[in-house]
Length: 490
Length: 102
Image 1 (cartoon, each protein chain N blue to C red):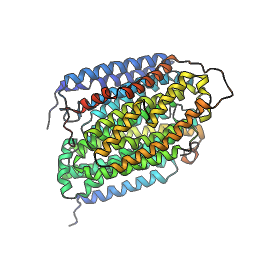
Image 2: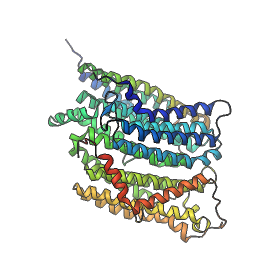
Image 3: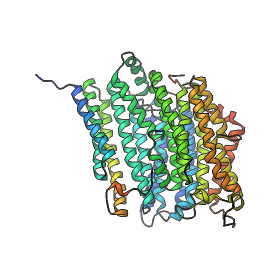
Image 4: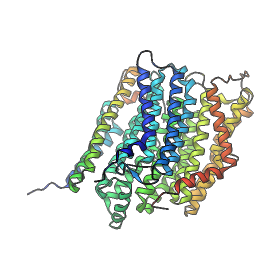
C-alpha cells in the first residue's frame, strides 16, 4: 500500500482555491438579498486568476509525470496545458455572462459558483490518473453543468434543456461506469498505468470482459464529447440552455471530455489501439457527416452551432484516431483554436440577444455589417475559422488534424473530413450572406453595451487570427507539453 | 452443493443494468426514470463488490462507496430539476417537456 505524504495535498492547491471560491460564492449568493451580479463576476475572475497563478506555480513544485496521492492524480505538461485552457475559457465565459445574468433577473451567486465548481471538476479530471478520480471529477463537472443548463428556471426551454441533459447525461455516466466496473473485473485495477499493463496480457487471451468494458467506457466518453451517434442531447441542450452556458458547454466541457478521452485511450487502453482505432474511425466519420448535413437546414443560429459542434467532435476525433504524436499535438492545438472561435461566435449571439431568447434566428443577422461593423467583422472571422479557412487558427488546426490522420494511414477518414468541411461552407456562409449582402428593416446601429462582452469577443477574434498567422508558436507549446510524458502509444 | 460464483453476480448485475437502461429510455415518467438510473448505478456496485471479493482487493469496494455517494447527489439534482418541471407544467411526465425538437 502506497503511503501519502501530507505535502502532496499542496499540489492540488489551485483546484482547492477554485472550489473554495465556488463554495463561498454559493453561500454569499443565498444569504440575505444575495450577492450582486457584478460583484460575483469580479469574485469569480479573482478566483480564476488566483487558480491560474497557482497552477503554474504548483507545476514547478511537482516532479513532472510522477503520480501523486497514491496514484490518483498526475501533474504533467499535458494537464497544465488543459488547465490553463479551461481557466481562460472560464474567464471568457464570465465576461460573456455578466450582462446576460444581470438582465435575466436570476440570482448571480449560484451561477458563478456552479461555473467555478464545474471548472474545478475539469481541472481535477485532466490530472486524473485513476479511473476512480477521473470519474468523480467527471461527475463534478457534469452535475454542475446540468444545473447550469437549467439556470433560467422560470423558462420552460431552459428547464427542458436541463432535464434532457440530466437524463441522457446520467445514462451516459451509467454506461461509462459499468464499463469501468468490467475493466476492473478484467484487470483488478483502476490505475491507468496498471490497467494498460494488465490489458496487454488480457488482449493476448481475447478477454471478453475487457472488450465489453472498454467499449462501454468509450460509449460513455463519446456521449460527453457529443459525437454521433451519441449526440442526441446536443441540439436541444445547446438551444435551450442560456447562451453563455451553451458556449461554456460547447467549449470547456467538450475540451475537458476530449482531454480525458485522450488520456484514457492513450495511457490506459494503449494495448487495445488496433481495436479502438476502428471504433473511433467509425464514430468520427459518422459525426462529420451527420453533424454537417443536419446543420444545413437549420435557421436557428444556436442550433446550427450545435450541429457544427457535433461535426467538430468528428474532426477532433481524427487526432485521437491517429494515435501518434502529431495527432496528439494537433488535437491540443485545434481545441485551443476551437475554444476561442466558438466562444467568440456564442459571444456574438449573446450580444445580439436583446431579451432572453431573441436574436437567434438567421434573419436577425441581416444587415449586421451596416448596423454593427465590428460585430459583423468578428463574426466573419469566427465563421471562417469554423469552416477552416485561412487566415484563422481553424485552418491550420484542420490541416494538422488531417495530416495526422493521413500520417497514421487513415486517409479515407481525412478525405471525409475535407469533403464535409466543404459542405459546412454552405451553412456558415449563409450567416455571412445575411450579414453583408442582405438589408434589414432596422438601420439603427446596435448599441455596444457591456464593454466586458465586447472586449471578450475582440480578444477571441484577435487570438483566432494570431493562431492562423503564427501557428508555430502554439504548436511548439502543445509539443513541449507532451514531451516529458511516458505516453504508452508514442 | 450449489456454489455462487462471480459469474452469477455478473449475470444478475447485467440484468439489472439492462432493465435500468430500458427504463431510462422508454419510461415517460421522470420519477421512474430516476429509479432506473439508480438501478444502473446499483448494478455497477454489484459488479464492483463481486470483483472486489473475488480478487480480495479493496479498490472495488472503495469505488462502490463513491458511486453510492455520487448517486445520492445525482438523485438530488434530478429531483430538483423535476421540481422545476412540475412548477412550470404541473406534471412529472417527460412527454410534456417537448418544446425543443431534437
